[in-house]
Length: 182
Image 1 (cartoon, rainbow, N blue to C red):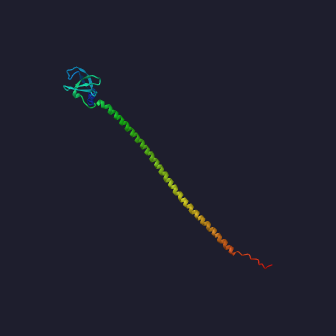
Image 2 (cartoon, rainbow, N blue to C red):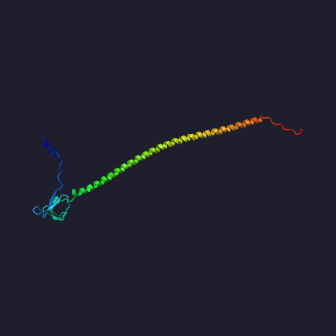
Image 3 (tube, rainbow, N blue to C red):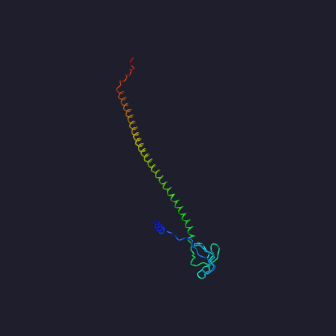
């Protein structure tokens, strides 16, 4: 039973075709010519401009001159060449994204700090406004008390002046000495 289940599990696993595919390079334009070697898929070759029997004359990356089936040639970059470029671009974009994310995080922290500072400043402003209003009321009260005190003192001085004036009017006057008196 265990053997059956392991083979079933192995049968359902995902597999991939190997990337190590190659084509032969021949000494002449056909399969009847000697094989000089092989060129792996994706390797760059230089097309020399000669075509015979659906074979193209090329120079491979090792400097060997030979013939390959023309349907195996493509003018676009192969995946083998494109993959490192794409991988490098992906790494660059990932690094840039990480920098932007870090900047965004630091910007978010700065915004939080600024909001906190703003809240503290608003609290301080409210407290200062309250103290200012209280001080203004106290100053107004002091001014009013000072005016009342001045009026009270003025009234007392006027009252004392009137009282002295009345007393002086009713005080007996000294008589004048007569000159004819001895």
